[in-house]
Image (cartoon, rainbow, N blue to C red; front, side, top):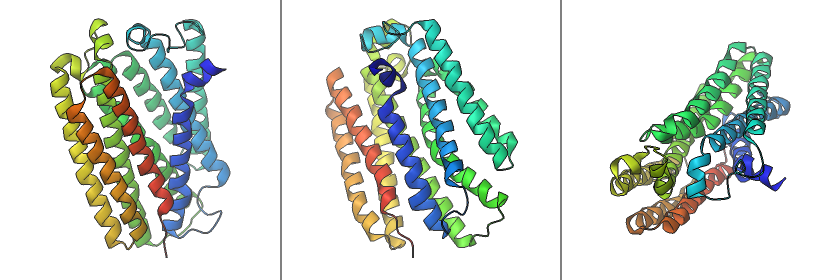
Length: 308
C-alpha cells in the first residue's frame, strides 16, 4: 500500500482536489453570482475531478516506468518498479487509469451535451505518453508540457462549468463572466509559471542521472549555469506577474487578497535568492520544496475571494 501511494503521488492528488474545489466553489460560482445547484452539479464536478485524477495517475505510472534507469541513479530505491511492482503490472495500471480517465471525461462530456470533448482526455493521455517516452528528454519541451497540463486542470473546471451553464440555459451577467474569465486565466498562468520553474529546478537536481542515461534535458544540453539562468528568468517573470495580480486585486477592492500576495511576492523573491546561491543537489532538492510551497500559497489564495 505504501508503494502504491508513493506511485500515485497522493499529496499531488490532494493538491489537485483542493485547487479544483477552491476554483469552483470559492471563485467561479460566487464570481458568477450563481445560486446553489446552478451550473455543474456536485456529481458532475466530482466526475470531472475523478477524470483529472485518473489521468494524472496514469501519467505518473508511465513516467516511472520510463524513468527506471534514471531514477536508479538520481533516486535509488524510490521508483516502485525497481522492487515492488513489475513492469507488466505497471502497464496494466497505466491502461486502467488511462481508460478510466477517458471514460469518466467522456461520460461527463456526454452528460453536458459535448460528447466530442472526450478528445481532450484522449489528447492529454497521448501527450503524457509522449512526454514520458520522448519530450521529457528534450530541452524545455518536457518542462513546458508538464506546465501546460498543470494549468489545464484549472481550465477544465472553467470549461465544463461554461458547458453546464449552456446546457441548463442559465443566464449570467456578462460583466461577471468577463471578470471570472480573467481570474481563471490569471490562475492558469500562475500554475503554468510555477510548474515550469519547478520542472527546470528538478532537471538541474537530476542532471547527473539524466546525463548518464542520455536524457538531454536543459542542464544536460546547455549546462547547469544556463539552466539556472532560465530558471531565474522564469522566477523574475513570476515575480512581476505576482505584482500584477496583486494590483489587479487591489483595484477590484479585494484587499485581503492584495495583502496575502505579499507572501507570494516574498516566496518568489526567496526562491530567486536561493537560485543564485544553490550549487549542490541537496540545495536544489530543498529549492524544489520551496517552489511547491509557493504553488500551495497560490492555490490557497483562491479561498480568500469574496464577491458582493
